[in-house]
Image 1 (cartoon, rainbow, N blue to C red):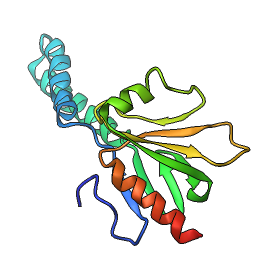
Image 2 (image 1 turned 180 degrees about the vertical axis):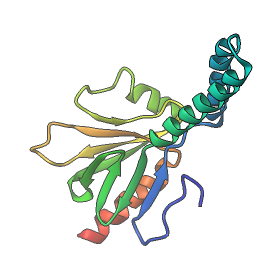
Image 3 (image 1 turned 90 degrees about the horizontal axis):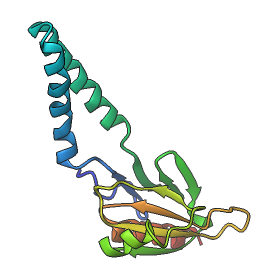
Image 4 (image 1 turned 90 degrees about the vertical axis):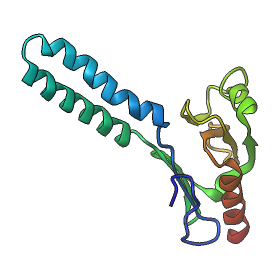
Length: 159
């Protein structure tokens, strides 16, 4: 299953990992090598060990910091945040230009954000909870139409 593929667990379900772009993964060995070059002046062996350790730590941090978007069992999850789909309102699919505006000049400081700079598209999900001061969630996603459809299917099946 691709990282942006909908889950096969049923109607209205969706799962996507917001994995870094390939060029970000490629930077980890480059940074490891850069740090190792400064250590290699002291010892070649320690330089190689440093390159391996720094690269491994950077790759582990990249993998660990990758958030997941999901719509499962009537709950929308974006990273560590969770909200019942019944408390969400209209979903706006954003192309690259609209997403730049949404997280730039049109951003509301109270909004919940789960953004990744290497993903140009996204969704803005209005919240329908009058007690929540957060007006909307702004989420990066590679498949905004699929996420919006999963939210709509979940809302329709719960009514």
